[in-house]
Image (cartoon, rainbow, N blue to C red; front, side, top):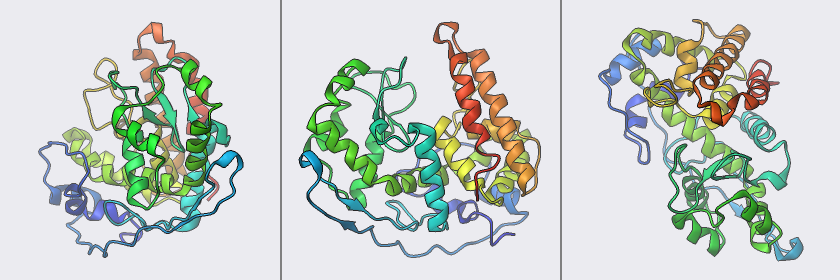
Length: 326
């Protein structure tokens, strides 16, 4: 079982020292985290850094838009070794997230949701705030663009400039007006062609959060979080559930965040989840817990936001974790 378990959860010290990772201060030692995860300290040798992905260029796109095709291996990583995912698993994650976030519609890879004050970009609808706007939910698109560049993708000049300055549209109306322009079509096409690289980025983001989940959990729930994390990680389709939820609602590492001091990230779902062992019941327990955590968020949310209107869609998404088709 340990050989099947996440390499990320074994190699805690490797990931905590990885450049670009957010650091969380907590009292649990790294060897204690490993003991919670595996029963005793485990050492996993890390592999050499894989080569960057190949970028195959083609020409002749409609309206002068570059139709480059970007290939990616599951092992590609800008910051370290990727999880041991097969091509089929990475494709599954990419396809599900594309359906969850954009309904499989390439036109929604450059998007702005009603009631939000930021653009939603790419496979994971990464948040992109205009310059000077408070970033309540983080600003993830610039970092994802950096990941694409590290893996050999050439960004259009205007995108590279906006990456550092902020989204060039200040409202949904402005973006909808701009979507008829060649620039936005160029960006939309690039985001469609790099779906697998974006999936790899999403997996890496989830992966580097995993060692922190147990250490950040309150002392009384630490063993439960570790048990449930391993249960999902070692269940077919569990990678999709974990990765998609991190992309969907975050890691939840700020235990005092959210509404009324109650966050709604992956950590809170693992705390809420009934103690489980690997297998199909673990996926049901995870989906049940996620639904409960999201319902709590709605109850705690400011009434003016009317977050209840999103609950049906959130529940539909969470229910895909039960039978992901692996």
